[in-house]
Image (tube, rainbow, N blue to C red; front, side):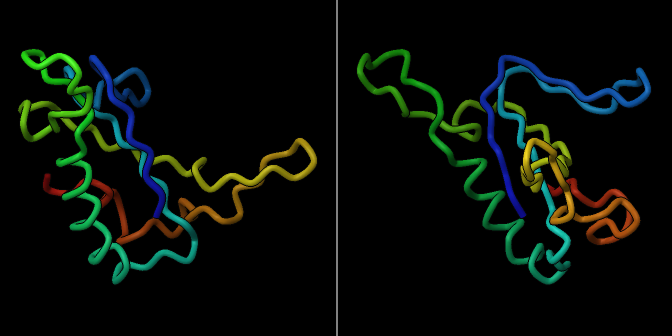
Length: 119
């Protein structure tokens, strides 16, 4: 499993022009699963990832200048949007990108759309 965390002012996901998820200020987390990732691994990694995503200190303290990385998503009550992203496992082969290390759509981790976790 690979995660990319991006601080945002707002974010959304649309599928076929239908809004399926959105947040105001917070973080977007791109979540990629590899073809060798298992459900057992995800049961261990999701709690670890949840703790780290929610407690990453990404915002400054407005009152104390010089405290650049003081507050987390939890501290500020901000949003988190998880987005499944198979391209995190892309590998460049002579200017062609191959995704053979990504979990295939035919065999999604946990069966179906279970990439959302209770944060």
